[in-house]
Amino acid sequence: MIEHGQALARIERHLEVEATVQRPIRTPALDVARIGAFSALIAVGTILSNVLLGFALPPPLSEITAAPPFYMAIAVLFSRRVSFWSTAIGSAVGEAVNIFLFGSAPGAFALTFVPGIVLARAPETSIIHRFREKTLRLLALGMGLATVFETLVFFMIDWPVYSYTAFYCPQSPCGTSGLVGGFWLAAFDFGTLIDLVWIPVAIILVVATRRAFNVRFFH
Image (tube, rainbow, N blue to C red; front, side):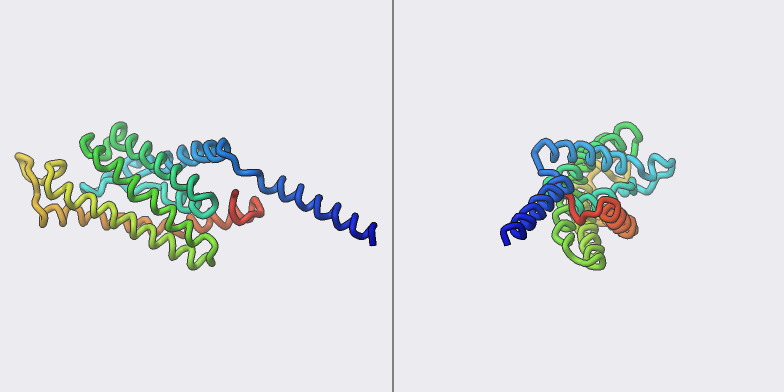
């Protein structure tokens, strides 16, 4: 009995060591490193847009980017803190590069586009994170809800901006468009729902990562 108990104790210690090797202890330094790496990934995804490929969309819908599958997958696989700050920082940097280097929109638009993309995208990660324990079908639903949230945030920001400021207007000299004109201009934001097509790509990234590393989530 004593030998049997000692054998079980050795097995338990072995399993604890193995679990420690497979699941590194989460530290602030590890979170910072992950946020830095994923911010760069999301920034590159945001820069990879139709503007970079050489064709423009009608204003104010200026760009469709390749970032959504990256931050959707990160929101599933990593902690809320890592996914939120990676998405916020990466989106802000990528959008600023698109505006100031590639001319996706007039420079003045950065005053609303950069904070707007952060306000729209970063909370998406919290929505998706709540579904990460669910089936893949429900996870896809969560990603869809997050995309709808993003679209509505863009619209709610742009409607008053286009209504009461001269950031964008079709007439010359430029003036405010009013609530009705601003509504129709901001309605272009509903084109953001095209990001729904990225959901299968995000699901593939999640499944492939889980199989490659033999984990459901990274701690």
